[in-house]
Length: 346
Image (cartoon, rainbow, N blue to C red; front, side):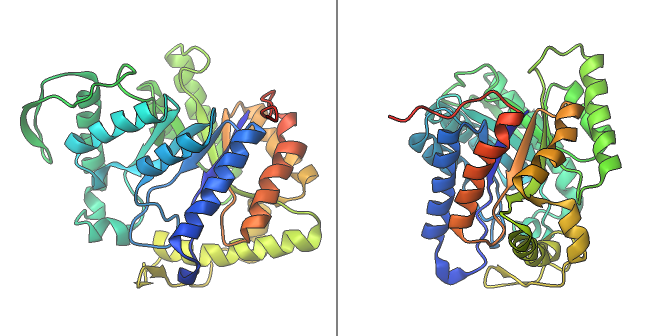
């Protein structure tokens, strides 16, 4: 089982500055690369200070320039917010400039506030996503593509430059519904999912759907992979654990507002509301614990055959705390699940 660090660019204090936020994310990427993590992942969100990254492909290119071997996943890019005729070319260029380390994670969008301010009603996002994906795949695999659909109508055109990998970078579908996981896997997509707040039965159903699809399509190892996203941090002791869970609870007060709540935003800052999940229950469901506890919590994921876990380590803590967690995880946890080694010191 491999591991990724999510560079989720949380920005709770506007005075901190976007330049410092992204420097913190780059520091994490460089450290993760050196310590042998399989990947880093980059979100896409606009107009809000949570998961703040309006230019994921640009950021992926910057990460590639500062690292040497780590994969760079978009987790995820929101296809309905882009015009596939221009976006396909951006994907090709990013894949070239990241030297083939890009994994294009895609999805329909989750924040109503964000989507509707770009003129995309939430009730249209699934249909828009489906057509956008069809157009993107056509543009990356064929020349002289024309289209006559609901959201796209255009005469024959060819995206330039052409992809250096057949069909462009591999694609990873963000999907939670087990039935959706089955059908997306059957279509050859890598899968990223999450069991919400630690819902174990949902996780079992998600993994079962993925495995059934792999079996039905007779997939070889690595043809399709299952990635699980979880909020995580290493705690030194019980007091440190409680401090970090409290920070996560505060973070979820903003996340709940923009994801499931009223979407109250002022000057780009999401209003913090009361987290829907009590702090004790949230603490039980998240991977915020000591290294020993972390190994125990991750063991069932490895036994289920999950290929990669994305660790979301950015939820309002001090940057030094997060770098310490990445280092502790690599030293005390990761060797129990992967043979990937740190880079030799120069």
